[in-house]
Amino acid sequence: MKPEYFEDLINLCTGISEQENKLLPLCAAENVVSPFSKIPLDTFLQEKYLLGGILEYQEHSNFVGSKKLYEIYELLVRQCNKLYGCKYADARTLSGVNAVMTLLMSLFSAGDTILISSEEYGGHGSMPKICRRLGINIIEIPYNYEKYDFDYEETNKILQSQKINGILICLSDIIRMPQLKKFDLPKECILIFDATQILGLIATKSMENPLEWFPEEQKFILMGATHKTLPGPTCGLIMTNSLELAHRFDTLINPDYLRNSQLHHIFSLILSLMELEIYGQQYCSAIINNANILADTLTKYNFDVLKASPQYTYTHQLFISMPENDAKKFYNKCLDYGISINFRNKRLYKTCGLRIGTQKISRYGWQDSEMQSIAKILRDIRSYNQFSQDISNRINKLSANKKIRYTFGSDYYDIIYTKLHHS
Image (tube, rainbow, N blue to C red; front, side, top):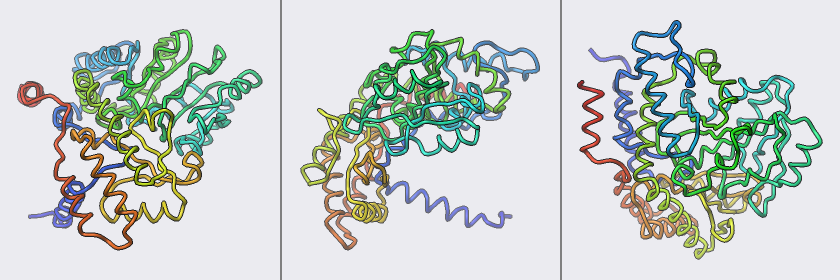
């Protein structure tokens, strides 16, 4: 006997699978997780609870077997220390936004004032809303649109003249590393950098590591979601070298603000970080190289690709400036062809434009020739007013070549799979 809506379920599964298979993924917000990293996701780990913090095991009122499960936390800390050089690493929060919310609730009080990144230059749109809901006063950080970085001179004037409890930087749109070391941080000011978009690039030394800029006596946190240039499961990863600061939120995250820390996701993240350890430099080099090749080719086709001189970009992202009506039209045509792309209406794009990301297509091992093909497809979509079957066929041909690269082979896969499923 079938559930009433079982046929609807089958149709939905078929529809979303066909859509994904045909998709040309140019969205900067998504990546693909390897079968190796997915091994823990359907294991008994998803059913397990573990109470307490990362800094030390909580014996009181914990669950049977939790002492052994705590070793997952310890392994994550060691793996993050190897890649990021951090003393504390915590992936118990459920996502990047959840991690920020938890840190704000743990480290600040209603009535505090923090500096925050503005949506106009790529700041995450949720952050002002969350701060206001928590009663935290916000001041937007001054920005230099020519340099694609903050105006540190003006920001430091604010830090000197007002009581600022913290700085929260969450950039969804980023083509170069902000030079956060230029902030003159007051002693008690907490700096949180949500590097969601570039965590993979930092881990592989493809970009500067801000953790190296701040001594442990300064209150600096590097954090982010783990599913952009770090091609892992959805987690919020929090890292710092200030153990004094970590003590302030470690046991608030769990058990106070969440109970189920999704151990299967944390274990999956460890596997993704191990992939980065071995294959990450090659992968992240391809990401940045592909982004600049695509940008250069689009520029030759008269797209106005913005530039973080001397390169177009130092990340996986491209910014294309376009008049609003043209951008909307182009964006909708891309959707019709099954191309994921981000429409942006903000000053960072010189009023309006589109954001492209190369992190997912690079995971498939795509290189120069595929970037040339994508540029031609985007050029022709812009030029043709009517739907073109030729363009659709070219997209389908590209999309048929989606095999995940930069991961371990069957030998390592079989070892971990067997240990977690059949031991």
